[in-house]
Image 1 (cartoon, protein in one colour):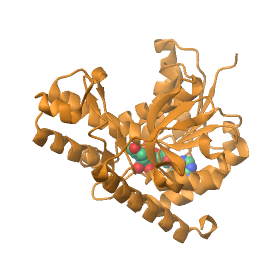
Image 2 (image 1 turned 90 degrees about the vertical axis):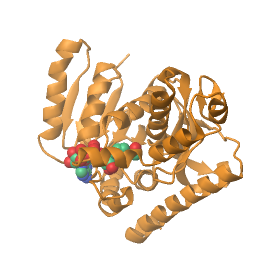
Image 3 (image 1 turned 180 degrees about the vertical axis):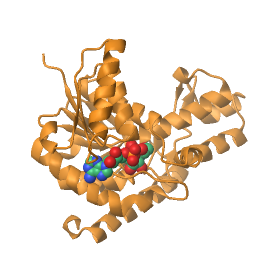
Length: 320
Ligand code: A3D
């Protein structure tokens, strides 16, 4: 059977890391695409040379022409600009919306059967725009944010409680902004929902409140440290988990930005909720039960996403 073809649109910090991880895990042959000449070719050659050391039979190629992504099974999109200290994700909308138009048209023309994972920020609005520009089926276009936000939540819980990261399951829903919704009642430490973990003395309520706040601002914490860009290792790992679930038909339930049509009482937008990813793309959306507080936090986060979608429509009339 032929190896899967993985197209990475954007060969920057996340794109390069994606290529490295995909090659090491032998997920398929990799095309690294970018508008910058030399960057995708250089990174592809560097990783291809490394394959002699890590010992996987995969082909890597850098490209500046969309024709090279032809027939891709999966496209992971990081093209655009990341934020710098002092910027919010929303400040990127003007530049990155234009990039999504070019990328959407390229995917539509050359890889219309691909499963598409968008990472470019502001995430929920960019994945919405990418689906519109590409015209691909909505169950084949998803956004990566929830896996990363939940990973941060889980890591902070593991660090505080001393429990293995493998025995912590954390969920963060809503939009990928500072008003995202860490789901305290649905997240578990050693099987205990977090309120029970507090009662059992794994961490204090003040610790938990601080972790929720740190999770919400987790992206900004890295931007402030790096100064030149945003996180890339954890975002790349998160998108690889989604890509693997599709390519290997694992049917994992992962928090992803997916198109909602009635679920959670919402329609016509992308926002982060638990979704089952398999060979058909988004195969099922899981609806968590929510209490009044969670509903209010989710509604606030959704309102931010709706504002960003409206901003996209105001910038590009073809989206209205
Ligand atoms: P960076 O290292 O700057 O890479 C972006 C790449 O996109 C560069 O190599 C550019 O040359 C390329 N590019 C720009 N315009 C185009 C175009 N029209 N077509 C093709 N390539 C183009 O950024 P990065 O890899 O650190 O981040 C990429 C994106 O991911 C940014 O928008 C970040 O804000 C976003 N991001 C999202 C998350 C989420 O959790 C959603 C996390 C971290 C970063």
